[in-house]
Image (cartoon, rainbow, N blue to C red; front, side, top):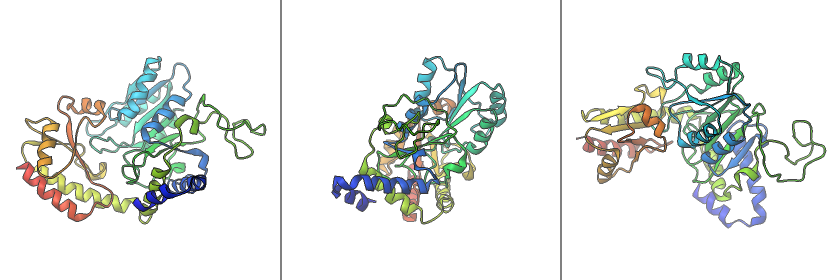
Length: 360
């Protein structure tokens, strides 16, 4: 990836349009998107989510459903909708599940939900939400679906044309292992948008009723590059290199290995009576993420102690205060450790040894 970024930085600006088209096509292939106009490259997942939410055409009186496990990148724009008089409600969680599907369907059955906006996985605990079933139920009751896929891209095989969601946002720097500053927004033909975008091209008089041009100019009500700005060409080159490398194997293989590695780290922490682990105990129900607290310490204090053991971890609220409210950890936060895609085994061994000393 480093070589690809360096090569892009050394390239002549006259090459940039061709490089952009090539990388865009590679991202579309990776995500199973047949029509490149349906995948907008953005500066990141936060930008993608904000662009999607602000441009969704919600009819008066329609409600929005979301979960208790959202990153602020979803929750923040939804709060803005709430301030404009659009009712936003949180889907009830199950006893041992992030979403109670029965309660979810009963809520949808009122037939006044215009949008369901949910994360595919809680970024604090790694717990997976049943996005496929939620999408099916939402469409059954005529609600659009926006998926925040930031946590799962690179870990699962996502064929966006087949997933069924109306909108999917993702970033490149997590499971895809690209540089910061690149992401994407998938906009299916089913998405009902009302986009007051500045036109990037002269309107084509031959455009059909849907706004799709007969030629190669994009007009109409879909968000475009006037809405998100120009993407970082160098980060995009890194994303292209990363997905080409990840494409050498299936996501399932990488995820199975990482879940085994995370389970070993989790088991090491569980030996301490002072450590409380959060998230599903079933590794198949979550990403390879470990979230925990230590009795008598804030997450920041635990993180500083881990640093002295040579481990750099995340601590605090992980930009998801609503998740911590649901978990009961809003006062202290949690420590989060995540295994990376194709994390070298010797690094897991070192981390396990250091965690054991920390837990003592």
